[in-house]
Image 1: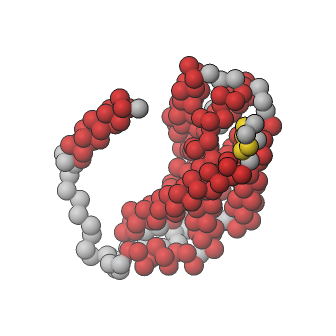
Image 2: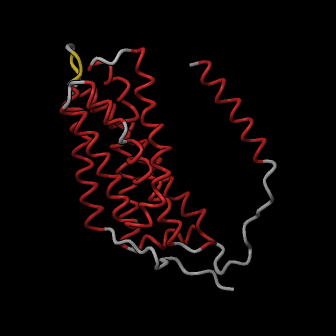
Image 3: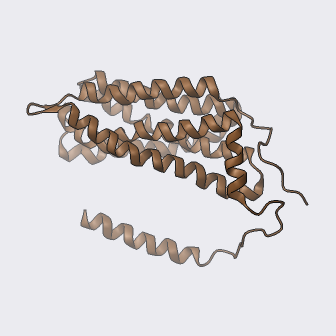
Length: 242
């Protein structure tokens, strides 16, 4: 752990120094409305954007089960400490590969289908975790993480980029990121409570634990399909006036 934190610190310093070399890009002061947050909150009046915001928040509550509990779960199905890091890294490798696929898929099928596939990937993986006790399908399900991240999280960010006016894009990204972060924070407590609830002296009932986020993603996916209508070519926010 110490080596990992040391490496992360070095990389953070390098990244900070690199940022000092970037061109100066101050905020525009000639926008029609200077209070960007007001425009962001005003977009919540649009039912589809409100649905996307709620989905982003709720999705991360249940997604936190994966981030918080997978490393505890894998050893119970026969994956030793020697292979634990390798199995966990499958998801990160697939993130890179799926991000390369995302632009084509998003242009071909649109925002709603892309995000729905991502939410479905989360649901499928939790179902596999809940019902499978053999390591092979669980390890294979790790590859779904690329679709979970790229198609659900990254695609939501891309969609927000396409529907808002240039003067509030940064604020919109921050707002959606804040919703996801708040959901992740709440999810950390929820996943811990559920884990404790289904853990006794004999061990953890992982079947019941994983069924909770699986059921959660059923609700999230149905909410998204029912309440979200993509407006890829129709900006919701007001355009910047010259």
